Picture 1 (tube, rainbow, N blue to C red):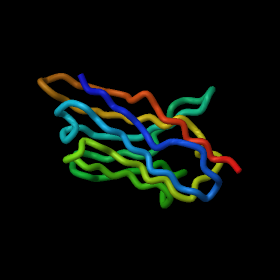
Picture 2: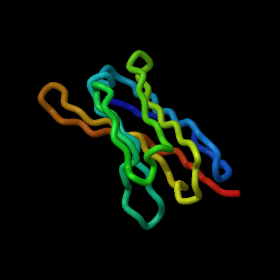
Picture 3: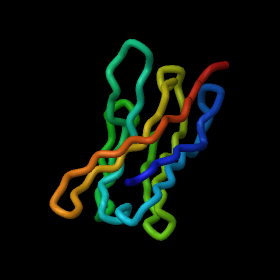
Picture 4: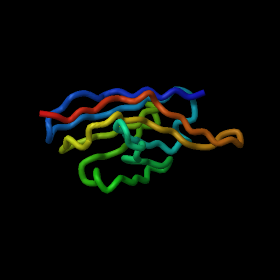
Length: 119
């Protein structure tokens, strides 16, 4: 079993920055593809950014050039640096880990951290 714990959310003014962190328990982190998703009430959860085991990244068009995903396998932690935040970035941000171990696929989610961008 893997637990993902997000932190770093909060209230920030437009144009501000936040650094989200997701700490993973267990021994599978380095073998996992990690991602950040976000969700607002009444809408589907959407992919924000993802990073493979090898460090390749991809981003939603809406955050390209403003957000950066990174991972530290020694600390079992994935980060999302969010810059130039806009009100439309307001959402609950979720951490996700996907992979395969012992012949079985896994897909774990954190509990989410609220990001509110408002003046």
